[in-house]
Image (cartoon, rainbow, N blue to C red):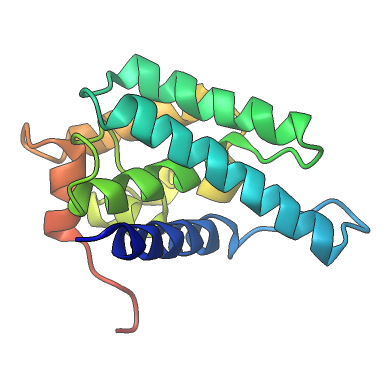
Length: 170
């Protein structure tokens, strides 16, 4: 694969990840212009690409490091003037990790994206079901990760997801 092909895939991976992370929740501050939205996305893309190439591509990241990276992303969105909640940040980072891992760019990530599809695939429902777009704190995320682990029979979360993944209405 040449550099143009890699760049194309990485751009597509970001756009797919961004769409998955923000499609079901309002993430923009009132009166945010299209130019500001574009600049914000460019900065977030750079932050994610740097983290993936500098850390995730070199070694397997621990769960603790991964959660800290989600919190770091969340803090950076706040500094950029459009704070995203923990649920949106985990979805964005975890989606990028999934695409990069499947393409062979990074080592296997420790987690999967917490979203309705993965929660349903793990049999989490009723009082245990959480709207991932409303997750504000890591402890809710960690609790869901642990509940999914109980369903994976020791398989890694990343591998379990790709083995059980299905696109809705496809």
